[in-house]
Image 1 (tube, one colour):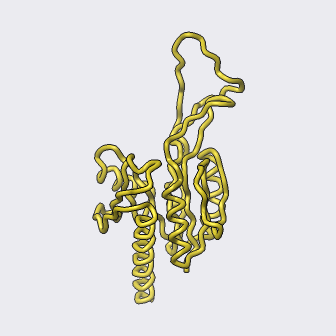
Image 2: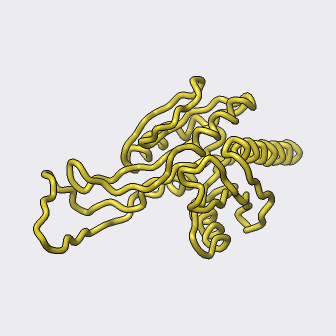
Image 3: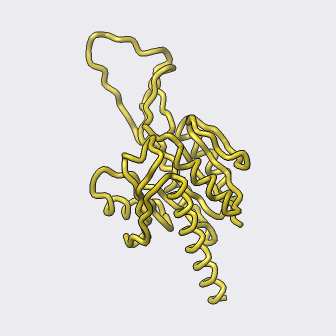
Length: 218
């Protein structure tokens, strides 16, 4: 049994009191990962952006809205987990200035100045202990494998799950599980619960192999 921390769903970055930037992440993959991890006997905590899915009753869920809020909670909970699965799709950009009142139409163009939000998995990956295992997700529209490898290195991930935009809001998924070297060790297709079970199984195997290797070295 391990303690798993899962980030799930989108985040929102507000432009004014009623408008925000976000993406189409539904949280379905995060919920499926939580279900399958619990079914396999693990303790699960989820940090979730705004979603309409239900997480398992056995899951400890912390709801957040913005990327900054998700990062703050994740930084507090990360030291207590053995495995982090970064399945969330945090909003990558935020406005440099948030309007205090609703932005009104003027009949002209509106220019937004955006800056990057913190990278949650990269921030946590930089702090991981040798006994922690970090799984990242990469959703790309081009140069899929190359971009996933770059992300794995930058985020200090032990494993990267590569999926496609078609997975958003869908009940099925088609993923490739990659090592940081770029080697694809498994491809899984099916419902999100089937894919989630396969991902957790791979994580279990790799963590066990690492633990066995460390025991031999001792």
